[in-house]
Amino acid sequence: MNATKKRMGRAAMCWAIVTLTACGGGGNGNPGGDSSGGSGGSDGSGSSGYSDLSCAGGEAGGVQASDVSLNLNGSAVSVCQYSWPDSRGLPRTLSLKKQGNGNPGNGGYAVQATYKGVDGQTLITVNAAADEAFGGFGYFVSHEKYRWYDGANTIAQLHGEDDSARGLTLPSKGGNSFHGIRQARHRIQQNYYRWGTTNAWVCQYDADMGQCSNGETPKDLTLHKRYDTPVTIDWYIEAGTDYPRIAIHYDISAVPQAGLVMFDVRGPYGAMEFANSETQALLQSVVWKDASRVFRTLNARNPLHWNTPWRWNGVDDGVNRMHIMSTQNGFETGLLAVNTQGIEPAGLAQDDYAGGFGKDVNNDINWGVSHRDQDCSVLSLDPKSGCYELPLSGVWPYQGANYSYVAHDTPSTNKLLAWGSHQRLGSTEAGMFGAAVKYETCWGLDAGKALSGGSAMKLYQQAVLLKAGNAKVCASKF
Image (cartoon, rainbow, N blue to C red; front, side, top):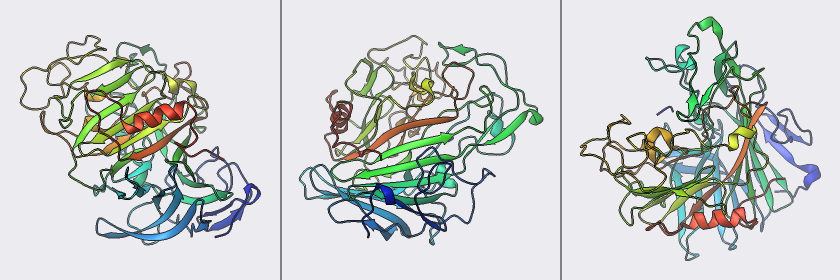
């Protein structure tokens, strides 16, 4: 798989970022600015000197932030922990790992969340998966489009770099601000990078194939360039709401024109043990809404595996885009799109990832009930093999369970969750290029009812409320 206590009003939103504590200011990545700012620095590689100062602030009854040391997977981890009352008035927490402060690796993403179960009493604890490569949530990932299929698939690979760097592998800087007592924002900034060409590569989009079909990108290393493309991730927490909002601003203004880079966006990204930290909890169901249709697995109470039947033909205008997973014991996690306004560039709102995402093994469009696989003993990656019951892994619009299986009939305990898009961003296709890629999601965690025979999940119900404008589902921006 290719695969971070003083009340203050709006006029005095104070940030503690790296070695600075500043009030006011704004823009251009400066403390106090909105999410249009960059990540700071110009070398595209981050700075080993990044570290988060104290994040303490807020007031009782609203959002509070504290410097806390957690014991996660046998190690002490320094975090900025936010606590707030949710829509039921019950406590929730979100813990974001700090950069430095004695922590191993890098920071800038969630490593723990807690909330009360449906009885209002049971504490549900969601910890980062122990997998060091993916454990944690909310970091940014973006894949360079495959250019060739003969060894090195991307420009980045030709230059010995990761073509889809996981944000948890990059240094970050972070800090928070408060708006009154009810709202907080935690900003995380990183120097991401993107490999591309020095001359524009014109996209002749083939809707049937779901990709640009013309010619090949030159392999001459002198015709390639590494662009600095910083990312800013703002976490919003609000008293009286259930889920934090994650606003992503991927700055590609260093790329002077369309056709030089081509990529997708997969953040927020990561793996959390959302079934009350039960590492062996089996995945039960998946449901998502892409730009036009709803997908849902139809597996009753059986665990999710490659023989699971599905439908991808429901049209539901009552929800925005979403990606939800549940486990057999009824726990859920998911990403819910806040709205379709404010998304940049405009082409980001088009159908996700692959034009042929409804195709079966015979390459025929199948929006209805899934095809039945042939007699295969192991999972095959050949789309013509007939060894798939679920849709071909490479055409899922949202990365997650599709890359979690090692055998055809074996269920998975891997709880990777990610957002998604097609891989044509940055191309010459209309609506795919701009100075930045911007979008927002809400990260939902609930002890809901597992999907059974197509009935709605709790997070699906929350997605309906969110679309309808219910202000209690997700934190608002300020």
